[in-house]
Image (cartoon, rainbow, N blue to C red):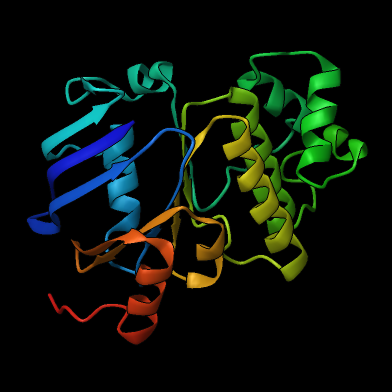
Length: 228
């Protein structure tokens, strides 16, 4: 479904990614693993079309290099940022309704229940005393309501409690069941057990990619042996 070929990103005169190659299949959970500063978020934003790059990106066999963010979104690619957006004064239900393909309240209620939140949260403001875990689950609900073919999730496990971690893990597995491929970005190997395959990014380079258990062992032994 997604194929990244020799992707290089240079920002402010610094090479952030160098000849990165990555491939994932439809309805697959692919874990992108790397320590902080390894280039994971840069890769996510390049795939989404936010950053310019050298190299090629293919989605469902089509070269998407010339497409804008919105054109890539229309093809079925979406990106959930590490820090969910805050919209003071906007109710959760209205925020979710913007992204939902099926805009019925019943659908919103089903999805908000799926991510482990009460129906009442639909009537809270996005920035109204919500915890980090709640905001991340709302962001996941928005992604599910989009029904994307590919969801890029940037560190959904960062800064959350154990209960939220377990719920988010279950939601990601449910996304796969619904037919969405998930590129799951994290700096911790804790989520690798829900993945099908995994890739380690280190200092802007791919140093390993393959079955999750093999990659997990390598990451534990040496998470980033390269130095810039």
